[in-house]
Image (cartoon, rainbow, N blue to C red):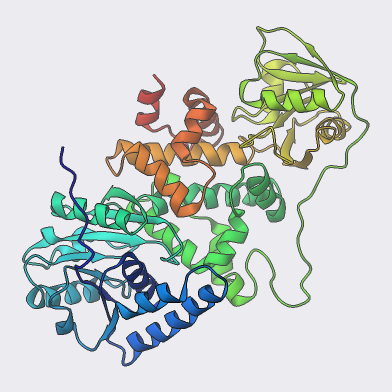
Length: 503
């Protein structure tokens, strides 16, 4: 099959909107070698954006990131424009203006009478329907979405979104062009949230749900997802950075667009922050307090007791085998137990098991081990320096200190989660996997593009489907079923695609 080529580098690219996003997209196109036209209806905005770009690029020259010649050539390709008519000969026009459907429709209908019939149109909208934006055009097939991530010159992802009438040639050309610009370009069909904003919801809402249920404090949950999960930022710190109002608005839009599907349900604790004007870093307070003199919040760590000398390992540890190796290397005598039993570590009368989605109390009742403690998922048990532990109700009060001492011998700090089903890293990962799988099931994107989008757009340590397969899809389904059994609200129902794939 012949691949569709990208736009040639001598083709002019026009960008409408000289704000942070529009100027960033213009810079990306110019850096790739295109002549670029930058238009904004605010007087002097395009010129001001180029001045700011010059300053920013000069700092990169000073740091040795680019040469002065490269900066000069990039800026020489940029031309500020005073009116839409100046964009007439552009081969591609990308709109990056206010998220208002009527305004975007008006801009594109004006462009349709201004540009040539071969000009491709793209909207950088992050939340509006590409089909709706194109609906007022005489030729809606020429328009698609090109959703860049902020800051566009740095972030690698570009979601190319096909509206109902977008022609396949337009989509293929935009994908090839974005890749030619150095982007990880993924294809998505028009759906609320596209790929990233749809699939990423559980990263925020699962942690907030555990917090609402008094499972742990925010600093501890952030540390567990960052240290054990290897996510770049914890969800509470991240939403403070994004802005609680912005993050909540996306969650509310996706929730409403899917007719109140419980999998996308926003958090009441986040809503309370927004109602109180506690929007995060930009307001000085959010989940954390950023004001001068504010007391910092640190994760809580269990004080270790006396470490055990011996440990018996039943079953097949599988994913957490590196824990056994670390403990053995630390001087703990590891003895093999019953290979036919469920995988567990036993020592000093307590039973340590990887969470399977139920509560520790439920696990203790099923196994008959009252001193059951569940430990959480880690992205890499060979290197993690923090794990969550959750004890069964009624377990020996000294059990947690003993378990913490065991892991401390391997250089792992432990944090206490109240008896929360699925703990925090496990439940977050399986929900991310489930929503990515459902996006594939609904024809939004391919499994490969779902994984690539989340790695490039959010810097997750692995794609959610890739991570689920590493964990084992049967395990993912088991954990989801346990969560659904616990809550019984439809939030954790398993995607049919996961069921098919696991079979």
